Length: 152
Length: 152
DNA sequence: ATTGAAACATCAATGTC
DNA sequence: GACATTGATGTTTCAAT
Image (cartoon, rainbow over all chains, first blue to last red; front, side, top):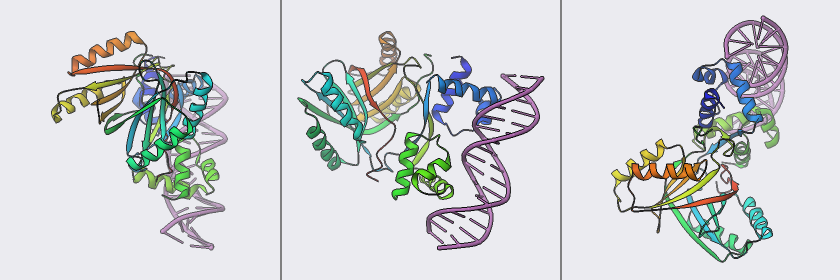
């Protein structure tokens, strides 16, 4: 990935609705090579896709919660079941297996505390944990889907 | 927001590169009303924009870390400075002010441990904290930018 | 007020140099 | 990598419900 690819990717990660001509002008190329580079990056899997981003407040999911899960079930079958459960719950937008004290970390979006409680009840019913603790976000200071291009 | 809008939004949050005709067919409308609804949702701020998603591994930022920050500086000026610092660091992709024990939570993406250490040094140099602890993601089980449409 | 079908304009995609 | 052409797609108009 050269400078041009990095520049293209940086722009597209911020705004993918830009026209090929405008993009080409910004990076200092003509439209064709610009288009070819995008195709190549898609084919290589560098660009995973193009999505619309929605506003959390407007969609009535203004409460973001981080759920820290500890378990004593460290087998593959349990994880697979938990992963399937998480996949089917649209409130869970991120889900990581962690190192250290906490086994799993979930990012959850719901309308309010009442909805979070309902979500929580549903979650612990579907998978059993040894310990769960929840931390609530008071303010979103930064959220971006754009990854750094400086390391590639 | 009626059923049609919800359906359109759900699809566009998964794939915004779909053509207007294909989208129209999926939701059971023709292209024109479909297009109008998207315009309306953009104008209303429900749709914040369209972006390209990049692959973290391919961009050499395969290590995701959650940084929990405690501080004794609870004034607005300090937060604004910290926010500006975070905004300028592309490795920080999410940043929340939290309730409870931890004051701030950051999600950080870097190539590896060595790079994380360099990032960490840079961070604590630019803003002073009373306590920082880092948790590393071993596995990304779910990550989606699609918010639930079921609450709207 | 909202839709669908057709005309129109714009842009992406291809071939050639 | 640039230029010119083709084909597909987004966008507007207008009649109809």
